[in-house]
Length: 210
Ligand SMILES: Cc1cc2nc3c(=O)[nH]c(=O)nc-3n(C[C@H](O)[C@H](O)[C@H](O)COP(=O)(O)OP(=O)(O)OC[C@H]3O[C@@H](n4cnc5c(N)ncnc54)[C@H](O)[C@@H]3O)c2cc1C
Image 1 (cartoon, protein in one colour):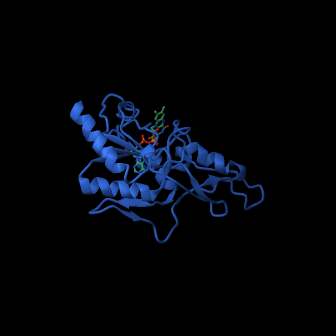
Image 2: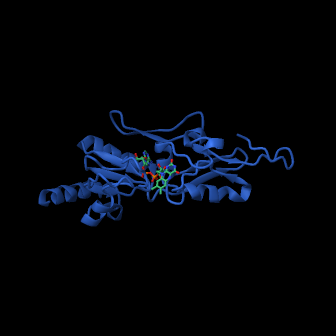
Image 3: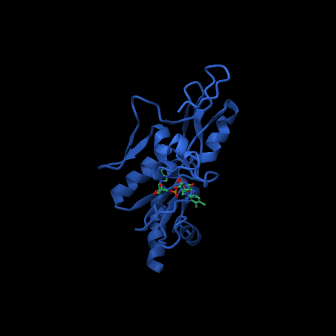
């Protein structure tokens, strides 16, 4: 436990040079809180948890982890049932808890651009006044995040009619972990998800557009 503690503290010190120290957690309570997702049978505490706010923050943390050979695990709300956010090899959990912004809503083109930690239901709530919604609706939607939905290709009751998450993603910003961390942004299309809704082009026609 003593050497684990020292390892966590050293890692937290390094990461605090990248992010404000309030966004780097290494205390025992935090490490315990992030030692599993909703699949609770296996547990493995991370050495550290970071709470980036921007893609650039994430890119720098990933860069550090690659350089220092520290394993890292992305995490949204931690509602996954398959252990995907379990930091099996310790290291750093990169939580999108503070990346919740909806960046752009393009009602005309039914496109919305949000950060990875945006909560699924907040997306539908944000466009409900326009008669639109984000179709993938896992029953965890009040907390599950867009990043988690995409990684797990989640669906819900509306999936039979509208399809799963991958069918609603137009473009993504990815951090390429090849030799060094790089941000890859789509050239042709802006990042975002497709919004569904009632097609009003024919004056009151209620056919769905999908
Ligand atoms: C009560 C309950 C009900 C559920 N109902 C459903 C349901 O109806 N349908 C369904 O499909 N699922 C359901 N789930 C499973 C789960 O909620 C979904 O898989 C959800 O999409 C996970 O989102 P999350 O934000 O919690 O992701 P997390 O659990 O945090 O992460 C899931 C995976 O995504 C990865 N990840 C997260 N964010 C990123 C990112 N930004 N970049 C790269 N990788 C990332 C993680 O590493 C992990 O592998 C349910 C779970 C619970 C507990």
